[in-house]
Image 1 (tube, rainbow, N blue to C red):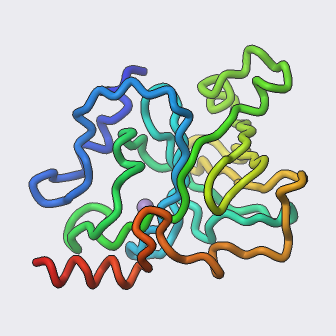
Image 2: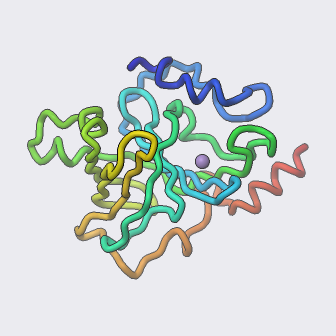
Image 3: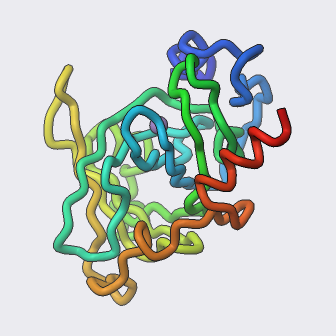
Length: 201
Ligand code: MN
């Protein structure tokens, strides 16, 4: 699927004269293996987990956010592909618009494809996604180490699970979703991002 096709749903659900989200016009080629986790205080608070695959950000909504404890399985519901520029988006989406609410860049960095590194050479990221089994080594500011995303249901009820792998970076005592709430982009909290926006307008 080319980039424009992949971004069709993203673009058709948004009015770019009203939302500050990027339209995704920059044909950034990318190949930086970006990942980003955005806390999104919409109707239901959730964490959007996004990884760069073939020039777009494949995306999942994770209601409880990622864990550093390998015993936790976090539900991850797939959402529409987002443009790469979205990794820099932080701010307030107007109430009446799609996804209305505050977005905070909770973590950001790069990833390595562990399946490819293990010698599973055919398993590039697109193949892994297709197959429903993705193994990543995240190099973020809050999240580090191996994570696995596994598809557990298909079709309309498609859902995935996000799990920390057992490795040196696993830590059952950490709970960064609770203890490290600030943006890695601005250092602000959700509330401060919201307030900054109201005082600007
Ligand atoms: Mn969201």
